[in-house]
Image (cartoon, rainbow, N blue to C red):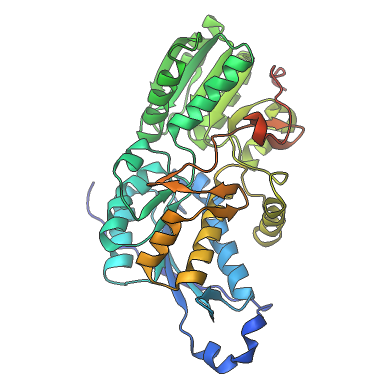
Length: 402
């Protein structure tokens, strides 16, 4: 990649006209003197990562800062301090991500950082988190390699490829799926999930009748979908990014490919998917999912707050993980202040109560919440597997595309 000039930071102090001093009102002069908590991040506002970043992550960062500041500020070991977000567009470019975080942590010395979007960006920046000793709670990174790197300051909130693929195959076996075809994007996310899926299929009695990779930014999947249709599998699995998820769905509909199970992710859990495909067209489609408003009272409250503030629904996948990570960070700062080592130790050694349930980490991996599968049913992305986490019963036969 050719070098680029550093992007200017877009600095924004999130202010709320509804801010109140709350319980700290007894010492207004001390509150007034408290410096803001400077929190830095990059986010994709342009380029191919924008769709995911602007659904699953940045709206949650803005909502969190807004709500904390409306309550008088972030509780830093008993002192309320306003949040100042220092952010910039990474243009969906890994080099820009790395350079910007190195500046935020190395020379700007912000108090805390929030992670970028996606597996590739997080994989690139994870070593920096460890080098500069900044805790990262990453809500959109799926990579076993990140777990294996054993970076003590880096934590992954999403379920990683193995537990997710084990859940998919478990669901297939329990519901009579005997054959499957798979496509996957040719990058870290796709390759790791495909590898984990092949391992999960071993000794399952389910045959993999076709598997094809495709390049990022693909514009046509018709040839591979036609080939898969000819093999008539019970199930289709796509380890796909949001534009590709919609492309595969539209083109499957176009050629009348309608297997018993149609599973694709990332992007299936986005409200955009339902809107583009129409609720009737999305009916029965499955993908990675972790929650909805039925998951917990906190999840319902978060959903409603997101809609009220951001004027759009959160997705039913990584948005929940992002908010859970912010819940963990809020509590860590409340108990430990801005001592990053103490925050890191608290995150690593505590079982955290979140809107998704109890989250705990073994090394970098979230081992508290299982891999879950969602399915569009009557306009809601219901959690359907595993059954212990389900918000609705699995529909075992996808209806015809509408």
